[in-house]
Length: 267
Image (cartoon, rainbow, N blue to C red; front, side, top):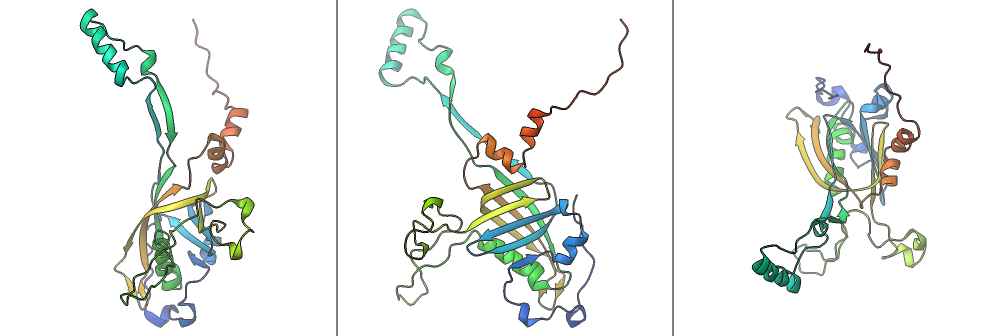
């Protein structure tokens, strides 16, 4: 279900948009709570981060797609002496040493799940909080932070903190070290929930494409579409995929659907 463009037009102070106190990025951004309460939650996407904490809600605008791949290679590929011996045998006998067992594939790993979706932001009360801030926040999830200025005078920074979680973080040692310093620092963890059926507890944001609408309020565009590409933080196992789908695989296995009743066909 696509959320179509809302025709509401904002005209400066008449719409109550001007509010300097709300110009800073709030903790809760995107679709306002009053709208969430009146809309079907099945068509909402919730994105949450910690370190720092942020709650972002958006309309699911269009179809969304998943992609996951499995990498396999030949288990008995010939090389070196084996290949030379096979060539010699084929030269003498006309047959090679290649066999079907050698062409069996062996698993080399599976990719993280990639999720591409289009989100819609629309200003109902506040352009900055409901459109501009969530777009900027999503863009920030792919950019580094921090760093050190070594005084070159051009604003260059070194030793930047990468976006996303710290791959060396261990929950067991989270309270060890001064101030949660690396390698005990968790980094920024992002989760995404689609409607009421799917939750990925840890994702990285690999791509953000923002298209602002030309409808303008006093504070900027009053609508935007954002295409976001998420990837799971790591390769999932079957049970963790089942957890993301809220246990649907287990339920399907334990309670298989009964076949539809069919009329008896006379013989």
